[in-house]
Structure formats: C-alpha cells, structure tokens
Length: 393
Image 1 (cartoon, rainbow, N blue to C red):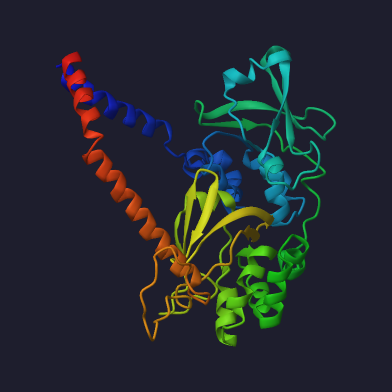
Image 2 (cartoon, rainbow, N blue to C red; image 1 turned 90 degrees about the vertical axis):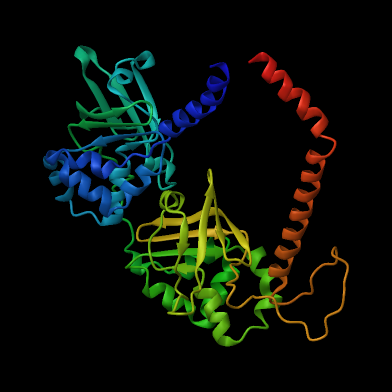
C-alpha cells in the first residue's frame, strides 16, 4: 500500500498542476449571455479575445448591448475601439469578494491598454472604489469621477479569470484619441525610427516595401532584424541573387495580424510573404514563458521588442536575420578534407547552418559523456538511495 501511494502522489500532483493552467475562452463565456453579444463581437474584431485567452490572470469588465451601442455611435475606427475596450480588461483578478475588500476602499490597477504601451502616464490605469451601500465604481485614472458601476458577476474562476458587467463605458481621452488608418502608415519610416533603419533600407532597395505596404490593411506581422543583426548578415546578403534577396526580405513578413498574445498561444508553422506553392519559405514559432523565438532550421531568432502594435499592423524586432533553409543549406564541398571538430565553419551562406550542426554534435557528446557517468561511477550512489527508499516504505 505504501509503495503504491508513493508512485500515485507524483501523478496526482501533475494532474493538479495541469488543472490550474487550463486555458479560458472569453468568446465561449460571453456567448452564454445574449445581452453581452455586441461586446463579445468586438472583442473578436479587435483581436482582444485572443489576448485575453493568452493570459492566466485577467478581469474583463463587460458592457451590455445598450452601452456598446452608445460607444459605437461615436464612429471610432477599429483601432481606436481596441484602445477603448482594452481599458475594460484588467491584468489582475477582481472577483466580487475582492472588490468589497479593497484596502482603504480604493485602488489603481493596470488595464491591457496600459500594458500595450499606447497609454501615456497613468491613463491606462483604472480606479476601483468600494462605495457605501455595496456599490463599486470604476473609472480611468485620467477621468474626472466615477461614472460606471458594478452590475453583476458573469463568471468567476479564482484566481484565473473574472468577468464582471459594469454599467457604462469607461471614457478616456487618451484611449479615444484618433489612430492613423493603417494604410496611411509609412512602414519603412516606422522601422527606421525604431532601430531597424538598415532593414528598412533593404526593403526599399529591393522593392519589397511595396509588398509589405499592400498587405497592411488585410493584416500584417513584420519581423524586423535590428541594425546590428543586419550588419552581421550583409556579407552573406551581398552574395545572393536579386530574386533571392527579395525572398529573404519577404520571409520577414506574415500576411496575418499576430499580437504577442496570439504568438504565445498559437505556436507552430507560419507561412510568410515569401511562401509560394512548393517553395515553402515558412518558419516555426515557439515560446518559453515570455520569450518567443522563430526557428527556420538554419537559425533561431528571438523577439526582443515590439516596435508598433496597431491592429491590423504589428512589428517586432529580432536579434537575428531570418535565414530560410531553402536558400541557406550546407553547400557541397568539391574537395573534402578532414578538419578538427573545433574548427569554425567557413564563411558563406551556409555558415549559420554549419554552426548549428557543430553545436548539435557537441551537445550529443556532452549527453553521451553524462550518460556514461550515470552508468558508471554515479551508479554507486543511486543503489544506496534506492535501498533507503525501499526500507522507508
């Protein structure tokens, strides 16, 4: 009995941990409440739904159809509506009980508008105040008083997600400020001003900028290599044909809008602007916690920052140029000759690919040596440990 309990406990712990990280789906949650259908619709249209679902701890301040009608009557663009609605998504958990137990009766908490980087100062923070008689008021920090109040709890899953209905839209001059139409944004100007001047120059020189610009309105994700990364890549770039240079640059664009939350929740293969039938030109998105990487079979590049995120356009900065394996495979050597394993690979279009191969071989050797140690000397330590556990049982 003791032995079976010993083996059962780790399994029980694993199942418990899995249960605590179960993802939520705000669209399905709100679909059960017809009076919130317009709010639900615009969470999807602005892509906020995907960002909400990608977070483990969140509070959604939902608006009924009447309140949404008042908001839509102002004629805001979709980009501006996203800013306004992101004020209604708090990056902390507030259930009904917590709302009535706020220290000193009032608190400021960050909204998704604040975390997006679009808000100046405290304009992205929400003031929550526990009023007399059980009422709770909500207002942006840059507004002049409490105008929206707690109506009811829609759903609570402590401390994962809380959906609360409030009475009115949270008005903020900062969130409601006009946002430029995506098609009028000069992409290369944006990239050049935010650390990707060299990459922007290559887009213009090859004419790739026209393809990028034409895809903005329908949705575009740009992965821009920083200036230092482009500088390191230039010796290889100069050896490419004109057509291959264009392919490499188009490889850095995805014809779909992907917020950071969407990238983290939809790991896998992505097509690019260079994808054309049998010529795959795709890469794999992976994330480890907050770190998102792009793998091309030749190089792994890390996203180091967000340059702009204004749906339907988002631009990320990379620490390396993306090298498609269709162009940067290991070149055959005409006269092979033995060389020490530690020697650096020859410079050329396949240099990064060769470096990865060397790294893989080194890793395998380390694992082999480590395995040898466990099968050898370390075995002396493992046997007494196992006997001790058996004796305890």
